[in-house]
Length: 185
Image 1: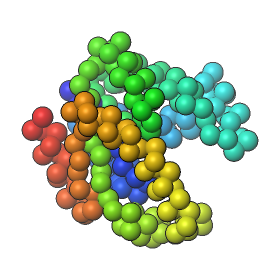
Image 2 (image 1 turned 135 degrees about the horizontal axis):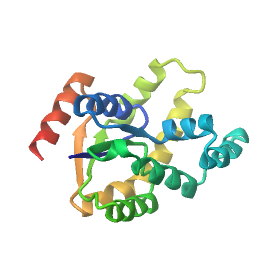
Image 3 (image 1 turned 180 degrees about the vertical axis):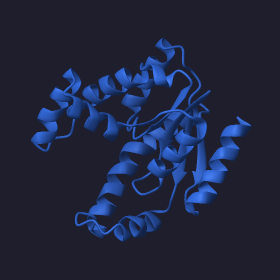
Image 4 (image 1 turned 180 degrees about the horizontal axis):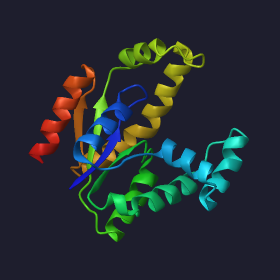
């Protein structure tokens, strides 16, 4: 059963790899951004709550994101596995997820950190050509990511769940490494 949590900085290729692997193994790719957009679009009770934050430019509170992830992981299409992208982002969320998976009798998720040097990430994100992707903004996002995620990487490393993959390769090379890793586990 495929249960994977992707970690990595913005621009590391998490979304690309998660989508490709999800299609390959026939499991859902669960992105917190997608969950949020879908809940708002469908006007679910959680989506209505989230919309009030999004409309005012605020971050959606962690508890609300956790509730949405919990709801999504309990849908029928996740019974044969799933790939999480963008969650957890903090140790608090990781503990929540561990407890949720234990309650759901779904232990043993593999945590993959796509490791990419900051200069490569900056180059990738600048090449997308988005107006808000200036080098200064990207480097600040990386600082925030590192400060929030380093404890998360330590958390999963201490639990022997973390595998680091070199994300500074072509997407096809990264994908091949990921498939080899997952098959070997």
